[in-house]
Image (tube, rainbow, N blue to C red; front, side, top):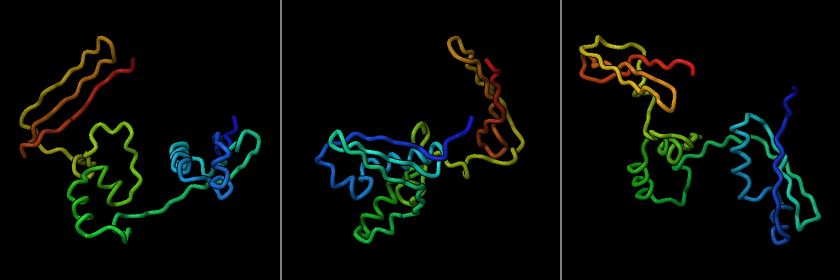
Length: 163
């Protein structure tokens, strides 16, 4: 099977949006198309619109990478920026303050920071526990937790057989 080289997105629109579509892809569909490109890995998309029912307009959208941080907006006051900095943590800080593309969909723990939480080596453990989900409706899983000599709790290992 040969993978196509680009994505095709077709949008319906009314004659009232004619001027917007003649100038390019309007602001509404652009982020959605960029998201499709990011998720699928395609480098470009053709976005088509049927204008007023009988006219077809097609525009090419390429992957854009613009790193824009909150500080780059000259219309925001320093007090407002400081307030947002204090409020946003985790993935929202990376997304809203630092301007990094972070997928938030499905993020259960939006403050999860891999740099702070994942360790390369475990310290000696003082005590162990096993948490078990015996899986009457879903797959069985077990996690081995350990209390380190530094009084921190670690997920040491996990086990979940293929179902």
